[in-house]
Length: 118
Image 1 (spheres, rainbow, N blue to C red):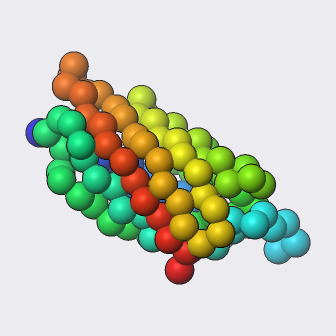
Image 2: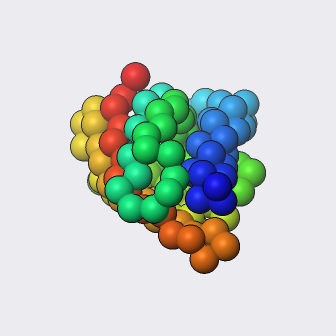
């Protein structure tokens, strides 16, 4: 049950970050990957939920707020850290994918994620 909490925290944090970024984003700054993205996370190992989908926002190449810190570089490289869970990958055009992993109470979960621009 603890691994499910990691995954849920990941998505709740992303959503909270999106709200924070929309409220605080500078009007003139932009990166090629700014905007809304639908992200689907799939568990490959561990006892986390099999699949979860949510919408996130990238503003000025940054994903931040609450326990989330991360970025999307101008070349599309994605790096995110959330309370000991990590995700990385690559965006290109209107889609992207990568891997994620985390552990809670010694129980590891990992898998892949896919994103598409909304």
